[in-house]
Length: 209
Ligand SMILES: Cc1cc2nc3c(=O)[nH]c(=O)nc-3n(C[C@H](O)[C@H](O)[C@H](O)COP(=O)(O)O)c2cc1C
Image: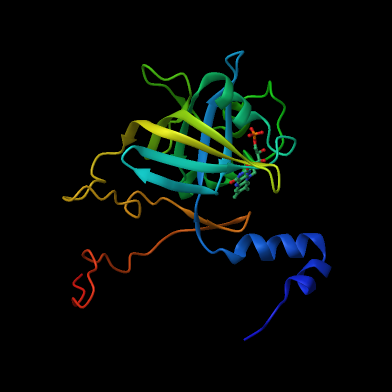
């Protein structure tokens, strides 16, 4: 095994270190977060630090960088209280990655990247029309992480939009069938291959698939 201490890692070139640390955690969910500004301009940005907070109430969190680094999504969410999270498929992965560019607040990333907006009643925030798994959220809480000036943005799921045929008999959403991508680091994207689904594990009981 190769061993690295944090004091050694700290000595590395900034970009090398960033790639190393960002990919250490492994594969992550990656999605596009859609918001709308106070002036009504749609905003879209890619996020991979997305985490399930709880099923009932249905809560999802994501980590937002310090405001200077990623200002628009979090500001729009604070102002409007609403946002959408949209899975990414191979067909539009380049456009999805392009949303990470530092566009101005008055630039509409949907127009800039060629992705299309999709709106539903009762939600101001735009969905990504091309995405086959997407959901709309209402802001619950923004928790500042003072150690590095980032934020945990927590939202409750209010609306879910799925392409037909993705829900299995037991409610499991087949993201693999939807060809949802996963990400590694800040620039690697991967498709998935199913390995297994297991029944609920209990001590001393042999697992069945
Ligand atoms: C694959 C990938 C994942 C990213 N994940 C996050 C993330 O979880 N949190 C974050 O704040 N920025 C993340 N970014 C950077 C944002 O996409 C970028 O800062 C974007 O410009 C923010 O836009 P905004 O100012 O409209 O919010 C990621 C970028 C890439 C390419």
